[in-house]
Every structure is written in C-alpha cells, then in structure tokens.
Length: 119
View 1 (cartoon, rainbow, N blue to C red):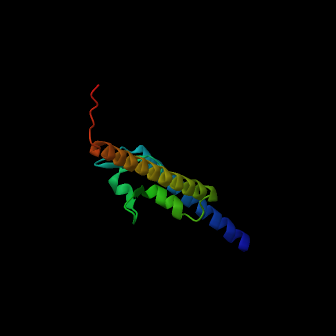
View 2: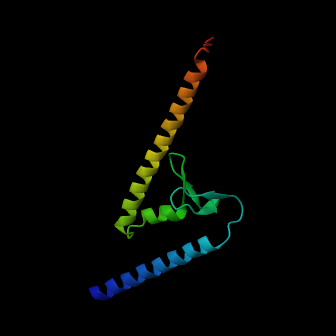
View 3: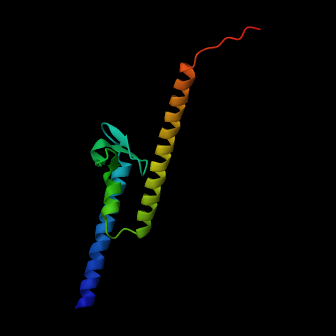
C-alpha cells in the first residue's frame, strides 16, 4: 500500500541521515594523520584527503560539499552559504583593493623628489 511505501522511504531516509551523522562524527572526532588543511567555510582543520578542489582553485571539505549536494538539506543552509560566500568575496576584494592602493601610494611617495628647504 502507498502508506507502507512512504513509511519505508521515511525509515530509509532516517537510516541514511543517521549513517551520515555517525560518519561525520567519526571524521571530526578522529585525529588527522598526515598533512591537514583548513576549510574556508566551516573552519575545521581536516586531512587533505577530505577536500575537493573547486574549479576556481579553492578547497572545500567533502562534508560541506555533501551538505550542499544533499537534496533533503534545509533551504536555509543554502541561504547561509550564499550570503557567507558573497560576504567573503566582498571582504577579499576590499582587502585586495586596500593593499593595492597602499602599495600604489607608497610607490608614489617614494618616487617623489626630495626637496630640502634651507632656513
């Protein structure tokens, strides 16, 4: 019957979620062996084998990518991620612009001729 099928699907989904949670707990509680890396989103330090490289060159942990690709994920996680990424990009651009302007002004000052005023 359709009700039994729905119940079975719900049970399977719950089991999958429990397995994912257990796997995530094991990954976070076990001490990393070998080189580690810091995820730019969740700020967890994990083994480098737990990362995917995005086409832009940034590395994100597999746990974060799995959350994004899970269709059952709450829609608010998407909003959080998009806002976080846009704010992060804005801050990076602002810092880069500030550093560039600082270097430019410093070079301008260094290239100015020195004038001595004798009193």
